[in-house]
Image 1 (cartoon, helix red, strand yellow):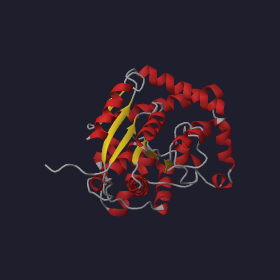
Image 2 (cartoon, rainbow, N blue to C red):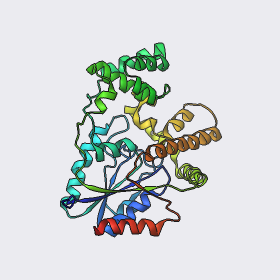
Image 3 (cartoon, one colour):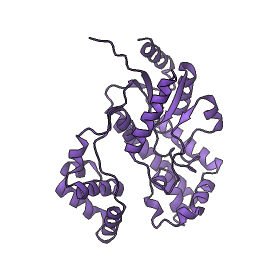
Image 4 (cartoon, rainbow, N blue to C red):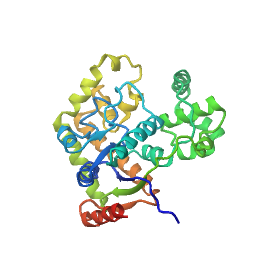
Length: 317
């Protein structure tokens, strides 16, 4: 069998608050690498504190890519990410350096490493019509419509997930083909690299919950609510009829902060909701990561030597 001569890359994956940024920076410094963000919140300008975006000191330690690509009133698709990341990775490899892919957005990792099925572009008019239909009938009714044309999609999309219900119905109404069928087809080619997938996750779920709570409190102390107030004050955001439907505002923590600043609930209630939503995000991320059968799991607190050995073996091949 011929040796695999593809360039090397390392993917640092894991749930939120698991220590991915610190590990990615350490690997970049050790391996002459550059970090490629694989995070759907970090692409938005102005989402800094609440997204745990690497700060100036962290960025000074290693080059970072794919941060601050869009304004918060704009959208950014997985296909756009895969295309942008593919170009960035090719540039990094051409400079003789190693791409360190770091983040927690499973769809972005899948798009980049496995390729994407050929999906139609978003149709603003159809999306507006679907939103109006949902306002009249409710998202549960639209979920029933989806079940009628694409039972597999309806089975994996929760009835309270308007974004994914809307997208699945949009795809079907634009193409006449269920989104499940299109997802089986290959569109964007996978990244031509040999990747070591490292998953960082504390073995004790309680420890991850403690880290999430501590980080959320730190964000509050750093001025997270002031950051969201500044976002709300932007004229372009004020002009959006339904800001809570924007991908940037749907990011965990930002939705809860937005609703609190709209007058919903107390400060203590906002904190509890933000922490709970972050825990739920971590749970979803862990569920997705368990499907990464070719990945290796490490507890970042106790498995540092095992992780270092895995990286050394991979690089030496």
